Amino acid sequence: MPVRTVLVCEAQVPFVTGGAEAHVRSLVEHLRAAGYETDLVSVPFKCYPKDEILAHAAAWRLLDLSESNGRTVDLVIATKFPTYFVRHPNKVAWLVHQHRAAYELCGTEYSDFAHTEPDVGLRDRLHALDREMLGECRRRYASSTITSGRLQRFNGLDAEPLHHPPRLAGRLRHESYGSYLLAVGRLETVKRMDLAVDAMRYTDEPLRLVIAGDGTQGENLRRRVSETGLAQRVELLGQVTDDELVDLYANALAVVYPPYDEDYGYVTLEAFLARKPVVTATDSGGTLAFVEDGVSGLVCEPHAEAVGAAFNVLADRRRAAALGDAGHARAAAVTWDGVVEKLVQG
Image 1 (cartoon, rainbow, N blue to C red):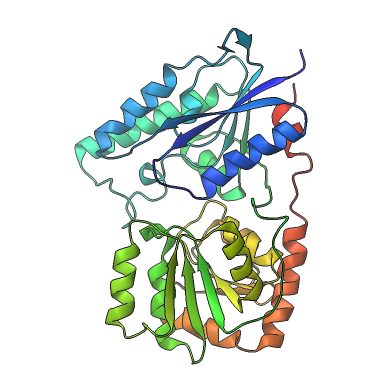
Image 2: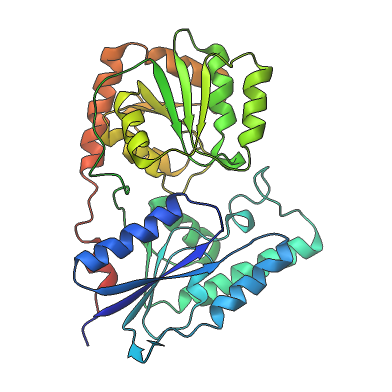
């Protein structure tokens, strides 16, 4: 039977909007454009305290989405943990990420999992459940090669990388190479916006840093800017509109995006589509699938002095333009062509 009706599953953290949320909404939009009757199923998710995690996974397991409102649902597409616990005979995963704190972030400052008996037990349980639930999927895809590699490494399961453009792809443009570095994203520890701020201590004037986004680390970042005497050179805008973000990209000198072991990183592709080079770090994960050092951006060690030196290199507008043009060619090759067909194939 051909697929006609599709449900896309989303675990939504209240008051949080980021790449994962853009991912599922873009997917719904493109499924509908391709003629599939599609809807989004969102269930709130909270990962703290840790003993809540399995309860939230169990809530998804209780859901049987094979029928809705008296109609047969032909296909369910799961995205990030724990949406793939849902029950459906034709379940496909397009994996954004698993519960990262129990996987590659464990043992780093970005995870709340410690080497204690309860935490080790919970981590092992999550790994086993993920193997089982993702193993049920008729097909598995991943949003990036990084995510695919993690799934193989930790769970022994294969997933085909399936790249797609960022949500703003059709709107991004280039106008000028201005006097500011742009940082975009949620203000969370794993995104390492503090590294971009600290790098400004090693950056020549008149270069400035503009940060667009909000999150739990917003107040800490503002305090850091004040304590380091950078208030005149670092601006935190908070959450901005799409129109404002497009304008910020259009007139930035370059974009700095140094997260720790990122899954995919829409910001990289957004920067490239605006012809801006990207400064990222050697341990930034998914960004390295697109940013080639000295070709489409600069890849440096995750230390403030190294990042600041990279900023200074890009003060040469001709260099920034050459790198930005190369990045644009790389990003333009990432399209939605074939993505929907892969996901809905019989």
